[in-house]
Image (tube, rainbow, N blue to C red; front, top):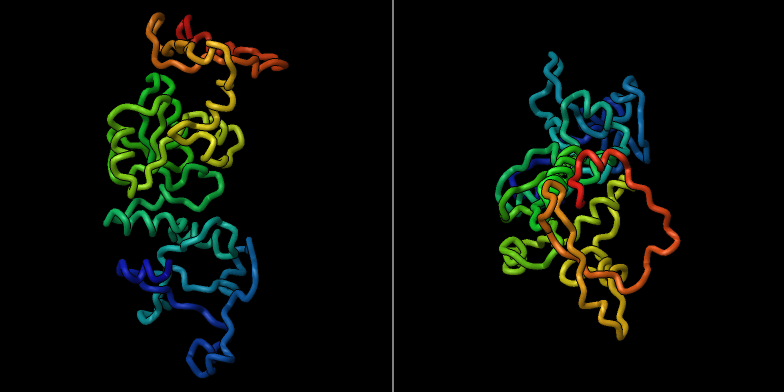
Length: 273
């Protein structure tokens, strides 16, 4: 990551060391110890000057032009001692995806879409959608935006995930035509499961082609003709339109489940849906 940053023109922030002699360069490298030597996930504000491993932005009279003050911290999470001080000082705390995607596409992405906060479960994701009812699409994209992600109406090189119910259409063909872009076509069920847990679940069961999630739960290999049947799933904003079809289950895979429909759905969906 450090090499990528320097290749893109970034510079490492000045490291803070223990003691006046260390700051003035009067100690050998063997004697110099970095400020925070160990693990600290949270610190009181008054401790920052004692433990901070880098210089925070400053506009005060004591600012030293030779010191490279930090502007960005690259971290997988916010569990480090200087985090609260970084937030207060306006330092961007982002994941390594911000570095990789910016260099890959030749532009500096907005940092807030690559947040290292645990609650931003869709951080770093750029989503496109196809073959979904309008109401479902709007709900899904709103959730993505609220939890750290972005979306695109049309397919672009920076799209990371394509959400769809069928493996067909121009957007899916785009993803297949340019495998080097790493676009992951998957079922919307992945987002629902991730939202339920507030933590990303594995992608593999939901990936096209042939998502195991559908193959394992909605179909079953036997000699019956039921496998060739389909169920029409009506759209949320039409009483007679069919948005997409799903394989008709050949086994009672929901046996034992007791299901209730939330009353709010009666007002937001069509009668058929």
